[in-house]
Length: 147
Image 1: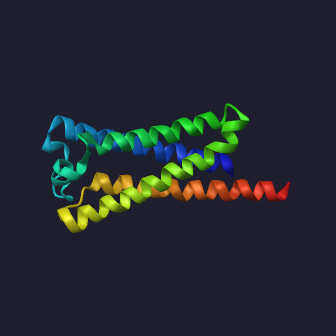
Image 2 (image 1 turned 30 degrees about the vertical axis):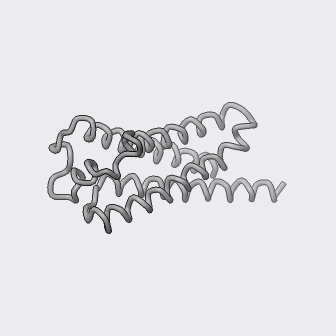
């Protein structure tokens, strides 16, 4: 069970990283054609003041979070320390990412009144990672209780 959950986490984190990278490419290239025309308003969201923190694109933060999850999942296979500690760290990153995604979705809907489909995709991915992280923690606790 844990192997399937780990694989699911890898896949979701990889997809999230690619999505965040694409958002960064849109922002840095300043190329409106990279946004999907007719589906949401990626352009307005990606150019808004909310798309950066202190001049750093939020997509870089997303890439860092997804990459950190990938690294933690990899380290789990390398030592008992990481095997026991990585799941809670992944949970923490996914929880923080989910909470921040909720805030950003609020900004999109109520402040900008524009939805970025790539941002929604990222929010769903981080929410999925949170769900898998919870399942992994629950499975780990169940294994400890059975021993």
